[in-house]
Length: 318
Image (cartoon, rainbow, N blue to C red):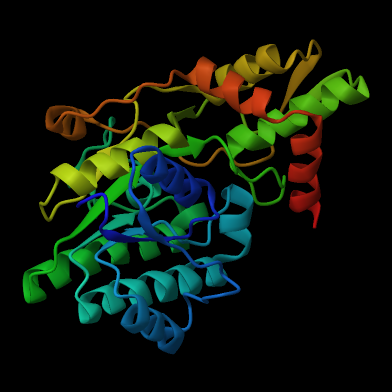
């Protein structure tokens, strides 16, 4: 992939896509193609194929997806399965028919079975039952991996897949109904501090263990894979380190400066007991994350100054 190669970043306004776009610009790639969802509905097969026929990108980062936290995944099950299947099927097939040289499909650690051995190795895929609350999203992402593998096998397409762990950072979603746990906790503790509240309620027992990766690290890993990886099997991207949700809440509370109590609402679901990625494969390839969790959360919270914070909340509540 040359600096002048034509590169399409699908989903460039999302957290992952925007981080990849920033990374490409930083590294000097000059011929970047983007479309907003209003300009190109990736669920529309005819529109997607027309776009690829017109633009003919050489390389493609597929970061577009319908995403959300445990509440959104469990509530909008049909939407999460249908829309993600449509997006990735349309884009991957159009990439094949238009002659894209290389495609990186981005999935999620939720593809692995709920009770898979820890840490999660790439070959644990399809060895057990999925976590029920996010099963539709996981099934869509598994289908994306397998479609890339099938097109490689049948047509010789250089389509690769990366499975990141839980992400956070710029352009995250702070809507408490659809966000993931880390941004939701940032919002809860920030608002509790501003309002002078005595406590913050947190869902579940606080015992589940989770791993978190700053999205800028994922962007660098995505570019690394596009430049250096050409095999069929998917690759985990993470830190290889985890902590309990309660420990995460305590860390965020400290960073935000909230001094009240953390109350656990044990009537709410915990989700998967543990999700820790085995990242030995990508470490062996030569990539490792650079941003520690405290540093990453501090950076994320600092970027949410008063103006940006209120814009984020306005977007979340729209």
